[in-house]
Length: 435
Image (cartoon, rainbow, N blue to C red; front, side, top):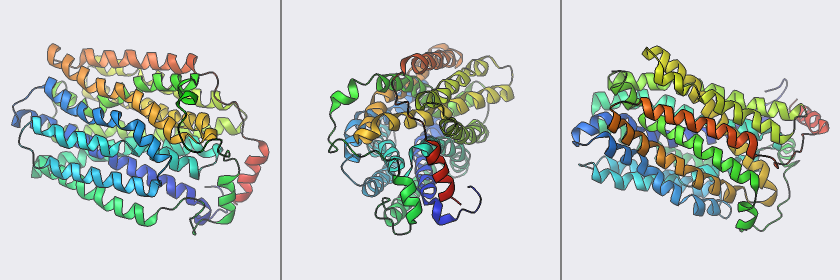
């Protein structure tokens, strides 16, 4: 925060921080099964191939419901939608504690996918409503850094609960947390026009370059599916989510099986790459916004982070070939940081393309739905190949190949994102408003 500013002049960042926290909770809800997987595999007498299906099952309904969830975000207040979603997350966690077989786990995980479908479109819509264009990449990186925060904080805490109190305790904890945040969000959140605690000068800063809506909120899919950049963003996002969900779902098991760690130690080791990714993700967003302020086109400001992040993700190769656990964790940290950094720029680019059409929610649902096919395939393919080969070497090599393809999709596929620059007068205005 720049000198002389007050807390009330940065309420938009308080909203962005709350979005980060909700995102962290969403990913804690996702990784809880990953932490419990080594124990559940033995308790339910199953194998890596079946566990891959279970770890992936969340994404089946998550992907299926992304398009309708995106459209709902363009019609229903995010205050209400976020709260309802969090309640479903809580119910899913509580139901998981009642299962007594591997097959029964599918029900709560499919329910979690339905409940989490609105969370990304709601987050992007919230940020688009609260942040001027010059702050959107930073805001998006904060949102995506919630992925890293949840994946960093969740594993050691959940591993401790699983090891000390049984696997059910991890799901009770995530259920209570989701329920608590649902109540707080509904009581606290208001949009910028209705928020009485928002200062007038910050309100003007937020609204100064908000494009007037050109549509009535209904999704003309022709506008979306004919847009070249949306397909380029979606293709790269498919590759990114394949890698991301491979890490989220299989990293603890990889450390237990290939690196011979205990469940408790794997939980703490898993948190290291995600902690690094948390800070790098925020810095990546600030880099993109800095480039925009320095006169770099919107297109290139986003591509710098998108392509650079996927190139960093190629460090997965080092993870597969590392001779020690420490080196493997270091390479994982680089690749995870690259994935999280690029992920934030995905949503900044989507906002750039679709905000003027008032289709941010629908476009986000479209990108998320198709991109999440990669999230479906990652855990399944990784589990099947690891089961067939007896190690994670080949699955990690395949993830590295997807990182290269994603970098090429973003580097050469994105061409028409609006090349607007943040005017010098706007930068001066922001500086004055924040003094």
